[in-house]
Length: 368
Image 1: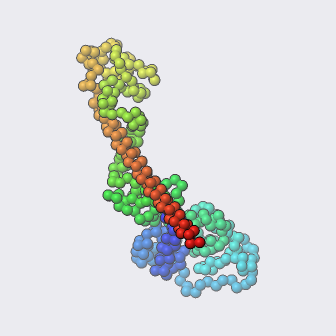
Image 2: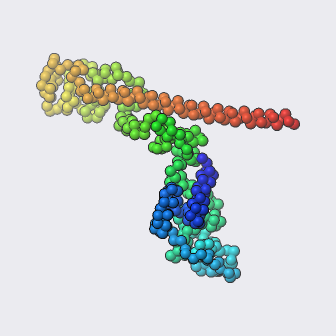
Image 3: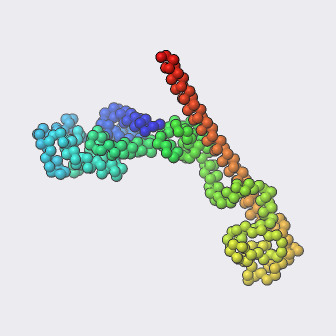
């Protein structure tokens, strides 16, 4: 959905509310913004308590039926700068009748729009809360500010509308709507080819539910460093088993240390700390015998380097990591396949367009 389509959809919704409630379009816009563009909610709140709803939106409808009279004299005084201007150099509000020179209008509108205000810009007269209609804004601001004003309106509309989302693809300014259910996941596809999950706003992930994807990503984040090492080196369960039997992490810096043979006193090459291979505690001052651990109270013949004396929790965590790496690879491959398929579809579409244009050109050429 392009920016122009968004503006048209937004204008259509404003017009519908304006016609049903018989109010001005800028007031209808303010009310829609109040309820985050939920038209059903607007109607419910409006008819339940009209006065309270309008007041909560900062709007006061005037009771008089006759519109305010515009100044009839040739010269009009601006109550902002206190200068006199010809009638064609001032602009009046059609609701409250307050009149100001175009220069003061322009200066005020430029400042308000730069600060991010759009539909909530009110009359400059002290104590007047009447909203400035877009027609005045479009006529009195420079083209650059007018474009910014239009973008702010579209941005606010999309961010609050329940049926529209911005496409998160880099460089894409389109919006996405009309999600299609794939399994239990609602997926929306942008014209640029990007697919997103409608609920979590992440890359489309059918058939995985959002909560399971979140759990998966949380696990990956926790083991990101080790997981990357495993994937890069293609480690499997047998390799992990060998690592469990022959390596341990230094209890001081965490680097993996391999034990070939010799005594239980290990020296880490990274942090230069001495520690016991069996209990993973600092060597000094409790350890005195290089072939006996005081914590285990057993000698080398009784506690040799065998799997049954290894830390089972560590082994389980490494096997868990191996399983996680396996599914990470599958996830990456599946994502890559989806991207290739999407690119292929776009390429096919472009090729079909080229063929159609070529055929049309050839038919024109033969007609001559």
